[in-house]
Amino acid sequence: MSETMLRWLTTAVRDRRGFTMVEQLAAVAVAVTAAAAIIPATLMTITSHQFKTNAHGVTNYLAVAKMKSAADFTRSRLFVDLSTDSYHIEIWQRTGTPGWVFEGGAQNLSPGVRFGFGSLATAPPDTQATLAMAPPCLDDSGTPIANTACIVFNSRGIPIDATGTASSGALYLTNGVGVYGATLSANSRLQLWWTRAANAAWMRTQ
Figure 1: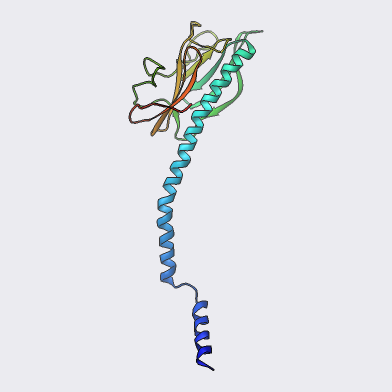
Figure 2: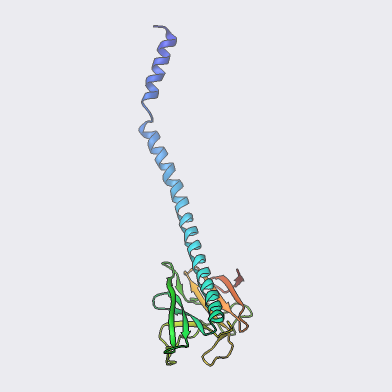
């Protein structure tokens, strides 16, 4: 057998052995290190996206409630349950027995997201004199419902208070890192704001 053929056979046998244990361990170490760097960033991105989606969901429901009141020529409201971090639309039924009627389905905030603004003390600019969630919802007899917040629209799609007077209002939600605020002016201008939870530096996002 020639020396060239012997060298080729030796190389072929060596190649069939595959990776050594040391090489495999090195590859695993590199993969683990890469995953340790990528996974937290990916989870943070997903969480941030879910939080933003929740904020836009609340804003969209406010817009729908506003349109429903004008379309049906009656009052409507976005009903927020602060104990379950859920919300839904209700329409005031004028015919038959007057009262609030559940409209559509309820929506829940994502895990880790809740209604509130944490320790912030300053409202978005030119929105509220004092940072506050919308007032409690009222039952059919006008009694406040505990652990709720409501933004009510009259038949022209204008946000109103309990006396029927045009009034601004806001709903806030937080994930502990940031805070979104959906604000409505007395002339029905809807805006979405965001700031870090540590200090109020509001930026309008919509």
